[in-house]
Structures are given as C-alpha cells and as structure tokens.
Image 1 (cartoon, rainbow, N blue to C red):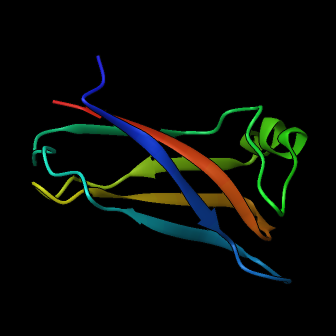
Image 2 (tube, rainbow, N blue to C red):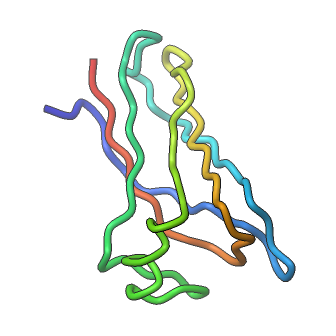
Length: 97
C-alpha cells in the first residue's frame, strides 16, 4: 500500500519542445532514502495544454522514471520521449517504504 501519493506537472516547454524534462516532488516529510517511488499517467487527466486523449496516447513514446528519494524531502520524476513534446502533462505518483 502506498505511503504517499500526489500529482505533479511535467513541462516540455513551448515549440519546438524537448525530449527530456523533470520535476521535483517535495514536501514528502515521511519519505525515506529506501522508499520506492513510481510515476504514471492517467488517461482521464488533462492540462491546459493537453486533453485526456493526449494523456491516453503519449505513453506510446514517453517514459517516466523516479530518482532515489531524499529522506524527509522527496524525489525527482524524469520524463523522456523519443519525440519532441510541447507543453504540460499531468503526472501522478505513489511511494512506499
């Protein structure tokens, strides 16, 4: 069962966009250095830049990974794509010990 969960926004910037971006997840006071974090997309999420349809299909060429947590602080979500992407996407995360 997850000890922590939440949402974040990844931003690939404006045209021409980028293949990589990251976002720091902070404020996780009970996270430990040995905690495991996972980031994922939900097909019904949307942002001002992308519809839920975009969120459903971007996973075909977008990978999300999480960095090692910093105890009492949080972790970083890294996003990498085979294509240049633009704008923001909603990302959800969970972590547990």
